[in-house]
Length: 396
Ligand code: NMX
Ligand code: MLT
Image 1 (cartoon, rainbow, N blue to C red):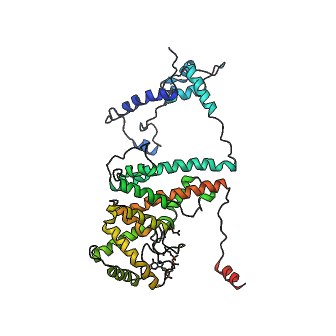
Image 2: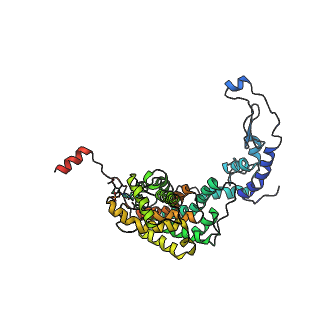
Image 3: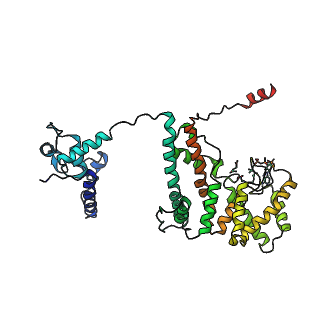
């Protein structure tokens, strides 16, 4: 027998196709009956499981791919200078159904030895390098993941284009969403995602959780972060509200007066004006201004009824909100326009907007994680106080 020099992987690559073909043959053939004794007897003797590597005969004992133990002792290579079967040659037989050559067995021993050391603890000062690697991997995979969500939910059954190495992150994202031909939308997505990239908040990450867990926690566990109108759902809410206004007023005839009346109607019904106000800002949100500038530079957006209504609302709403007198900030935030532009470009699935937002927020929350590791920041653990304690503190 000629000693084979193929690696374990190469050998398996050859073996697997033949095995999978044979498993699908004669699928309707009956191989036994189910008796009551099988059911109450722990399924003993019932032929109901596929097991490739060995068969246990009640008389002969175990056979590994047809080889009995004495057979194995004859043919499976031993350690250098040794006589006994070694686990490497047995592993090869179990995996491939073939007897390895001595060279193959030695190569497998070497591979196992090379990979055998337990990972050593990482020095705290080096945490950030591994975190960075995970963060970059996560960022790189997000567009494909987010595009798959979009395609599965809204355009099922269509092939998603493969990642193109010559495209930027969002160029690829847009392409995989199915909007690669729409360069204006792709440009808008680039700007939108870059502008929304950062936001404070690092609770889970501070537990030394890995970036995958911290990012998922940010998306799934933080209600405030991604699913409520006061926060990222707001751009959907703005769009819904502007469309209701458009329907009621009729976009071709809506005047500043009409819009002013609609704003008061919203406020008097006890609702907030979506897209206006901010927890921190006291001026127009510069992200809103940047998106406005993008819209002004694009002739097609200047003619868009929904974008036009956003612009007109901006011309009226701050004065109405000042007069209303409640909000500390009567100016628009980024959500006042962001969803409307997506809608104009044909990305009309409102519910998906929050996914785009999630892709964007990865930029900031993953950056913070790298910095938190680089600076060795501690676990975030605020001290809580009860109402009693608070009252005592106030009285002091
Ligand atoms: N329309 C009407 N009333 C408002 C508005 C608004 N756009 N914004 C704030 N107020 C009211 C607010 O409800 C509060 O009333 P009350 O005292 O009766 O509870 C009062 O003004 C004071 O609120 P502020 O301190 O100005 O705002 P706060 O920090 O509490 O909330 C927002 C900030 C963003 C949650 C709030 O302005 C809001 O609900 N805006 C509309 C929704 C929105 O656009 N969200 C997007 C947020 C994302 N982002 O900013 O990027
Ligand atoms: C934002 O992006 O501005 C937030 O959604 C609001 C905040 O900073 O609290």
